[in-house]
Amino acid sequence: MRTPIFLLICLVIAGAAFVAAVAFNNDYVFFAGYVVMQYMVLSTAWNILGGYCGYVNFGTAGFFGLGAYSTVAFHRFYPLPIPILLIFGGVVSGIVGFGMGYLTLRLRGAFFAIATLALAVVLETLVVNWDYVGGSRGAYIVRPEVAPLIGNYVRYLFLIMLLLAVAAITVARLIERSRLGYGFATIRDDEQAAEASGVPTLRLKLIATTISGALMGMAGAPFPYYIGYLQPSSTFGFDYAVNAIAMPLIGGTTSWVGPVIGTLLLASLQQIATVTISSAVNLLIVGCLLVGFVIVAPEGIIGLVHRYIRHKPAGLVGRSRIAADAPGPAP
Amino acid sequence: MNWLLDVKDLGKRFGGFVALENISLAVRAGERVGLIGPNGSGKSTLVNCICGTLRNEAGSVRFDGHLLHRSVAHQRTRLGLARTFQLPRPFASLSLIDNMRIPLIYTVAARGAVHSARDIEARSFELLREVGLDNKAQRLPRDLTQVEMRKLELARAMAAEPKLLIADESMAGLTHSEVEDLLALLKRLNEQGVTIILIEHIMRAVMSFSQRLVVLVSGRKIADGEPDEVVHNPDVERAYLGQ
Image (tube, rainbow over all chains, first blue to last red; front, side):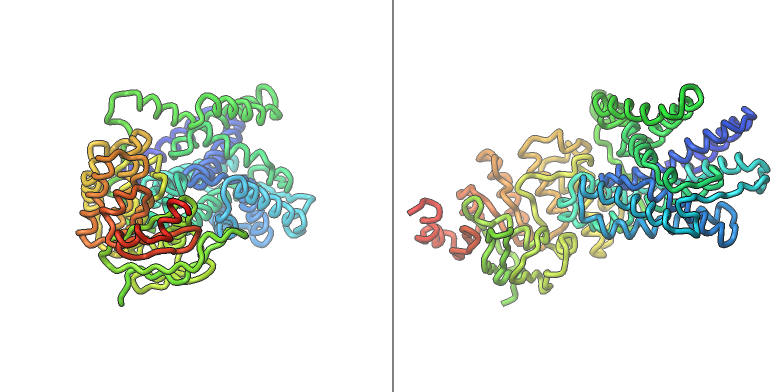
């Protein structure tokens, strides 16, 4: 399926989801939907580096927080519309993602993961000590009463996050089906063999960290308007990192579909648990599901489906994963 | 003389262990060179230093007129230096045809040679056909036997359209007829103008293939010359058979 058609289908589904949420006529649906979509962006962004390239990033909260605090910083300087803040958050986090990549991508496995975790701690410490954005006191952002076009601001925030999720999924799918995605897959499989085949692994990894970081920052940019009061400890909370890893792992990391399925399953379950049991049970659900999937389906739901297909007659196995007409020269 | 590969006084250490010491090796375009030596003699380390997987601390590597000390592995591949690995390292999540596409996209197309998606597809099938794997083009590498895996490794190196191919123990564990198959393939490649360095323990294969034989022992080169002459060299006999 060509990208414009895919994008159109996504927009139709997003439009249907928005209309369905309006039909409920309950603001909580928008609040909950916002969180689910936010995790869809975060898990999709994580998967670009973690799933496609095989580099496990524990720094999701750092990029997310950076996007959120970019909004606070710009808001204090001059209040801007959210779509513009989204771009600023993406640019700032993308630059930091590039920098992180440059400094850490010679590391592998646990060493890389620890380095990304350290980045989140460093960024949180910087924010705690930066008075302009509220420091350890936190920062208040007063949400406007009325949003452009829609009126209700909560609905507006949900719509923005919905569109951002569509954009993130489209970008992930585009990468997966391009020559860039080919290169990412070789990095995941065997970096030395990739280099020996002419793949510029460092350059590709830098592209992955930049795109991944930028999308995470964009997911964080509207957050101050959603939450109203931004606190460093919760904005840079470890649960963002855990969720952004758990969702693709449960759905499957080798395809854009995995994070989407994982997020719909896990984030929705968390939102239901929050209102029916307790918000504290969230991470317990994540932990239990993750342990279960690691044992039963280490390749996630998508892996389970592929395994099922492989047991079908030959011809469906190992189908070429890149469209034959994948455009553009090698990066 | 104009050498395709010119290694001069190459040295490599791992901590206190000297893996390579003052290795000099020059290879002419179109030549078939055998590189032998007991286990741990530094053959793979030398290949890794030539191909950019490892950095040498001393000496220089010049390939096709380019001094390689600053270039990383993928840049050397793009210059025309390809290798196979001692243990096959296919891209496990990609089908065989996709394994072929990688070097075609990232090396041949990146060199500026125009390769449309259709050309790449056709060339990938052609390469698989050359090694007898075209009927498994859509399979994943895990479905292959050991010999098929080695053929895939060789085909992937060939896909980069190299000027020099270094085959690192491509025949280990193969039967007599399988070795003959791979030798025929390498000779065919050589006839097409590809220079080949064959690292191998199977002496019959090395002797029948090589025009020149180089022997490494304990990180040092102890012999370099005509195969018949080299195998009767007392130092080589001592290295292989002991005092």
